[in-house]
Image (tube, rainbow, N blue to C red; front, side):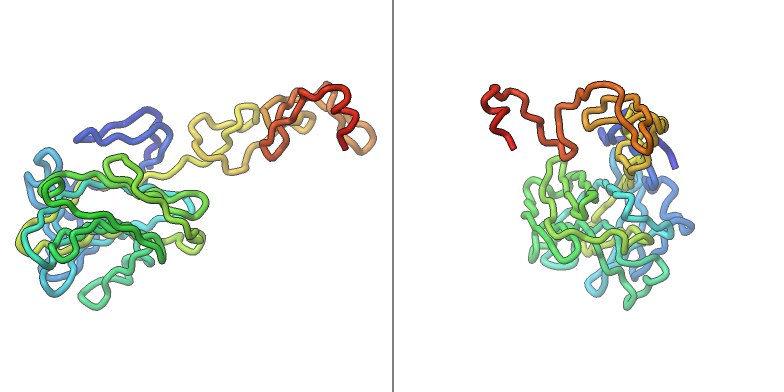
Length: 296
């Protein structure tokens, strides 16, 4: 696992933001590694030289008119860590059927999948329906989905970047070329999905349909309060672990107060400086004397 502390850019201007963990990265330069990927389908997936991003190696699921083919990771992912999946895809529509690309998390681990009868069931997934009878990009999140048209004149044989980000409220946000396309509205209980495989699959009947540079990142969990004893400057998501001196308290705005013990009670030793209630609402202070007297 690698922690990114600076903006890190991969090939083709592929950048990820400050303070994320890279938990999986696949560029296919070593082919389809059987220690990383479990493949299924006939014809089997292929890694093609000079067909990836910037003429590197790219992955073609290589399914046919009968079945999807693809690969599923042996590595599993805990979705409570709010992973984001980014990848590049280049599709070409030449026939009416059997041309598509998909990347996403499955509902189970790799041992559940293989052959033609044990193919992945998707929990959240980006599907490029390149064939002429669909011509849509479909974003799946649990029981919800959203589609936008596949535009041959704009997308055919063109690298498109997609990102799927799992949010802490159980929704999922989908991006194309860094533009937000859709956020789901029905929360998914990610605590039920802590051992999920990543899937790349599709059909490439008549033309190669290529996936490259798959990247999975997660938030960095920790204490984000700079006034806490265990403040973590790299953390991007506060996990409630902040610790404070027992003789100090911190208000909503981050002001730190010393306390004194009065019997079994702790009193702050100075006046409050806070300008917000604990729920974030501002404390009104611009009342007149008459208004103050009438407040209850």
